[in-house]
Amino acid sequence: MQNVYDILVERGYVDQSTDEKELREILGKEPITFYIGFDCTADSLTLGHYLQIMVMQHMQRAGHIPIALIGGGTTMIGDPSGKNDMRKIMTEETIDYNAEQFKRQLRHFLDFDNGKGHFTNNKDWLLNLNFVDFMREIGVHFTVNRMLTFDCYKNRMDQGLTFFEFSYMLMQSYDFLKLYRDFNCRLELGGSDQWSNMIGGYELVRKLEQDKVYAMTFKLLTTAEGKKMGKTESGTIWLDPEKTSPYELFQYMRNVDDRDVIKFMKLLTHLSLEEIDQYASLEGADLNKAKEVLAYEIVKDIHSKEEADKAKEAAKALFGQGGSLDNVPTTEIDEKTLAENKTVIDLIKLVGFVKTNSEGRRLVDQGGITIGEEKAKAFDQEITKDLFKDGQLLLRKGKKVYHKLVLK
Image 1 (tube, rainbow, N blue to C red):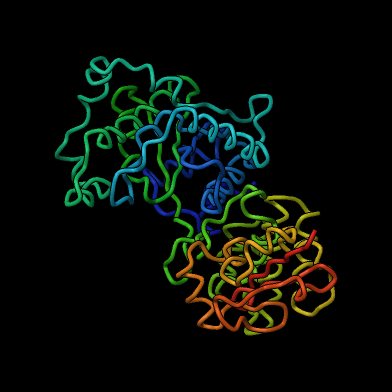
Image 2 (image 1 turned 90 degrees about the vertical axis):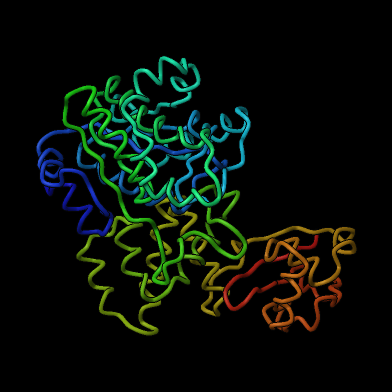
């Protein structure tokens, strides 16, 4: 069987790792327990998290044992990495709810039965720590001078950095130590923005336990333009179908930049590299076939084959290739609601195309909204039930974002 380290490198996941040769050797020799942490800052995982899930799947398929560490404790502080200001402080009740949602979603992708994987929540040990004891055992191994050289802290010095946030690295490092002691966990995985925090844990375990452990980061999910993948004008791409429908996910992936298709096939699908190579030679309009395969595979793996089939049918219908409109994102609206939201601006806010009136006005002025088969004439254009055909009205934002209104 191929070494999973080589698989991760070949598919483009790996950014950097400690003791690369040693890590590759141990991953090819014996099952090891590894972990990834998920701070519960929302009630759903995102497309960015999905890259981390894919890495965990590759590792588990190779026989290694995943720990999904739910950050119920660390979320109460918030990771300062990549942030210009302090995160909003969340209530424990909200964090606990988000944690349960994460666990539900992760069970869809990974096997946690019969010791094949583990869930754990760092609130179980972090919230009951004695401050003085923690500082005596853990804090003494971290120097402020060195911590301030790490980007996660250095980049915040001008805006101000609270001691509250400064403690985050100590707590994440302690997580690795705790998981090593409880599960013999020997590898931490995470995004490249976590390198500083991960080095803290890697060094702490080695120092206190006199054993070899490892850390490996993977590249963040970004587009060819260098933008963070999974962010759109209307918001984040979520894994929860109630927040981002399978159709919306399909369309989002179907419309990626040509330069990103092969990269995302390697990172976000389980298609073989041999099959992916067949698409690498396609250009221009032919590349649309590869985009459709990319979108289909991701929706199938995140949701189901049934949802992927529905999304594909809806896309065909919208682009004049037959298929059914039944699975286009839909909002039911009664005549009273229509009367209260009778202008173009009202309706595109209602269906989530825009968040503000000013954003909506700009979009209409630029010709970016189509009502039925005609461009919206003005932001205050009235929409009446006469425009509905068979009780339905199709709205379009730009060229490829659709929403169906149904009178009830």
